[in-house]
Length: 402
Ligand code: HEM
Image (cartoon, rainbow, N blue to C red; front, top):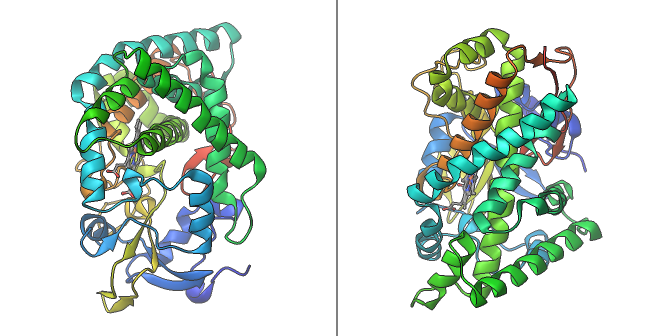
């Protein structure tokens, strides 16, 4: 496979070096309309803030449902064909979103705060005992999966198993079109499904207060979630809510580690935390890109996007568009305004945003408070990124407790 390189624009989500640092490659995309190319199918790259925001808001012209292709069919066969809220358009999306939003009321999120603080304390106690801090292994990986497990009402002790399944499923992004999904990916997905089919059955017999029970209960209504939609949503939650928040904590801690002045400022002024979290989301976005598909031929700034063109809306690039953000490559925890697109925009705006913000703030705040001398173990280290281009996450992040 020879990725498209004309006009010196390089885009290759399967290239490890590209995944490690895609930002320099985004530069050539600013100040120009969407960039069209072919990589197995017609594609477009959108990096300018105003184009990205416009496309995400315009669900009348830009669909979230991937057009059918052998590549998509294979994934549907493996991952199940019930519509997923994130890959659906109205009216399907409207109905699914309405039902699943019940699980994300402000009250439900607030109720989790105490548990998140407890989990964080337990994890940081272990760090203090060990005397070394591997941010990913010790905090960023376990915490979000423990929180999701708590939300779903399954034992947080199962987190290692969830994490393993979820990591394997996310690796599927690295399988190139035309290459069959590896068996371990399929196995992990089967295990996830099997586990939750069993959990749903348990809630039906003995409902509780947890999110699965809430979703099971809403099945009795006229527009209820079908059995398959329910399983699909629970699995989506585990995947969507887990790796993304892990990457907010990991990428955020790395940004602080590289910008020690900002880290000190934040440690001294914890009230800056909400703004700092927004800057972490903007500066090194946990979700690099999402995708849309024009429903018909659409002209954008003189460029015609043919119907069904796979249009990558690179929110991480939009978040560093110099036309929108002054000094976009500077990490500034007091940046204001900071209307980044890390959680998307429009009808698909992230349902878990309040939870992710709260979790990030608790985890990073507690780490800074507990270990005032925190710094990168080796600031010159070249960091490796795992998983997929779309979910940008560090493989490891060793820090020194000072
Ligand atoms: C820092 C962490 C997170 C980031 C950066 C993030 C990012 C995003 C983005 C960009 C979208 C929109 C995708 C699109 O428009 O195509 C989205 C949607 C979604 N996110 Fe998140 N997310 C995070 C955490 C979470 C958490 C913790 C949960 C749940 C526990 C969650 C659940 C969802 C769901 C269900 C949707 C689909 C909403 C819809 O289609 O209406 N996310 N997220």
